[in-house]
Image (tube, rainbow, N blue to C red; front, side, top):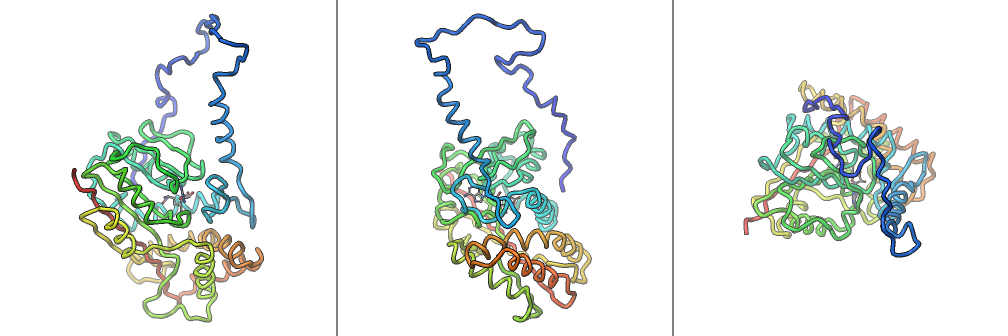
Length: 346
Ligand SMILES: C[S@@+](CC[C@H](N)C(=O)[O-])C[C@H]1O[C@@H](n2cnc3c(N)ncnc32)[C@H](O)[C@@H]1O
């Protein structure tokens, strides 16, 4: 992981926040002028924002897990609770291992304006902001699960990326979209919007994990719990209308949107410490740590909401599928797709 500098919250406070009263400063007592008696008329729009702000925390509790509500109940089918947040941070670490410590593959050099779509815990945005102090990074997500204290060059917004984007067009020098397809019903439209908002000459990078696992030596036999789990996932997501893009389809989306110089790579991440190669073994061992939380995160809502399975049955299948991953005779890998492209200059 890139080194995070020690954060001193005090040093991040704006030194002279306009209008903020500090202790011991004289209180300004001059009253404001009001046209009418409605003392709170100035706050009508603020109170609207307040209700939006509180509604984004109207979470849904299901199967013993917490899910987002903003953007439409059930839009994104993975949880957003603490267990999930820890899993996302560990997945970030795994993806850094995959990219040899780099935060991205696209040759975006010193981008000034950066957008991280579906930022999750904000871990990528924060790392990027730390290592690029000259960049201004915006992380956006359906769930307000980012830390309150961020570096001064990183900010977070809550929004649904499937709505019309409100940022200026031709604006971001780098747009990063990682692992968000579970909350996207129209992936092509997402990429079209990202194209419109990428600055000419700027880069966009997409990466997604496969919903399925593969074994090059056919060790995921059809009678394993793992195979049954993967079948449920496939049927569940297709019932929910959620597609899993791969490198070829993401590349095609980028081409259709207008991007050029598109490159793609697919990595196979071992799902346990079974490989001989030391680096891959470490990667697989780290991935196995994500396992129990990962099986539930991806599987529970898909199996209960879409396939009508009982919670206990779905949890038991997740547990048995994870146990298969720890079986040294099963050599499973998860494909990780990375695609990036450049918006042509004017
Ligand atoms: C699997 S997490 C990945 C988080 C982060 N990109 C990472 O790689 O660490 C997916 C995130 O995308 C967000 N997401 C999914 N669909 C979204 C949408 N339509 N609009 C905004 N955020 C979305 C989810 O709320 C979730 O936090």
